[in-house]
Image 1 (cartoon, rainbow, N blue to C red):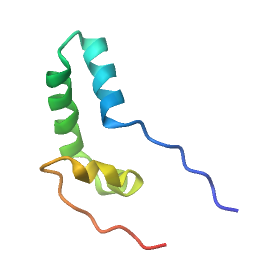
Image 2: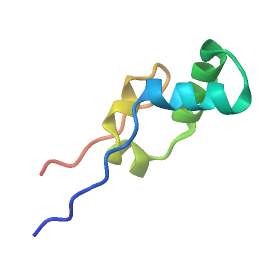
Image 3: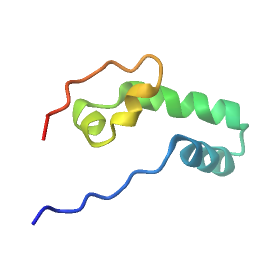
Image 4: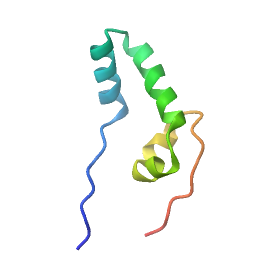
Length: 65
């Protein structure tokens, strides 16, 4: 039996959380979030391929199942 993976939160939801916690605009929060997405490792990109939609994120080969 395969292990069910936990879903990751979306970009907009994370953007909203960052803006609320730091008391900054959503535009600035999206910049912070995008910068973090660009620094993410290959394993994280495999877990959440939607990160590659952020401009500047280098593509990684995904394993075929």
